[in-house]
Image 1 (cartoon, one colour):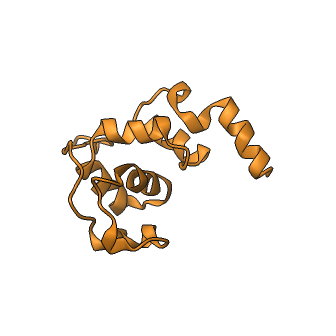
Image 2: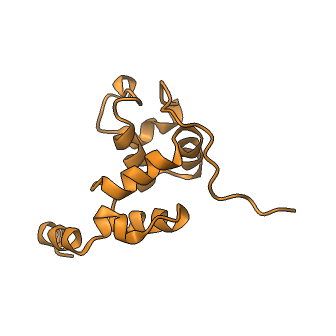
Length: 114
């Protein structure tokens, strides 16, 4: 029996709507008004940070590896802990992940020194 593949991304375009089971990750916005094509980076950041297995599987089926890597590389809303985890999973050089860079970590400590 072959081991389950960690990364299998099938689609290269954003979905047109979000499934209802993802609503819990968007508690602070009107879920019905989220346009995945317009807010794909925000959606990916939320799912990378808070998503459970079902949410992550949906993410991998509906967004390209490139889109996910782009969010990890350029988006500051993903925590260093989550970014480190996903950089390992998606085999992304940690030196290219913005929120893992020394200057970003120093700025983060100024706002939250714990």
